[in-house]
Image (cartoon, rainbow, N blue to C red; front, side):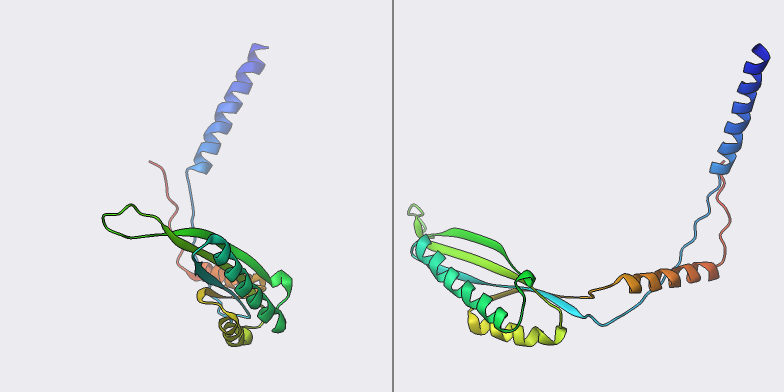
Length: 175
């Protein structure tokens, strides 16, 4: 029994030593790959900011203009799933009278719509329609590629090929 336990301990120590040597060496390779493609879709954010003496009046004005924006987008063929309201806020506007106690002078309502267009060529027409319908702010325009997976695969392949062509570094050894 003692000899079996001793043999197991020696085997464990040998295995631990062998694993330690394997883990002591590291080889790292780097490669680069780049693929470019024209964007085929665009996301944009536009909206309306309205001001009025009361919150109710500011909300009503903003809602009416936002409905005009949605109607204009639908007229362009933008699907409901490609439009989403975002960044809605109602803020009191305060007086800026120097030595007087500040007081509410009115309200500001801001509301944005996020839009996705599957055709980049429709961007100019969509922006014109939004401004005509009452949008008074454009927050962002982002060009994207609908299906980037094949491009990523190609870039990875280039990176692997590039890594294979680079000089091989010497393995790092622990002291």
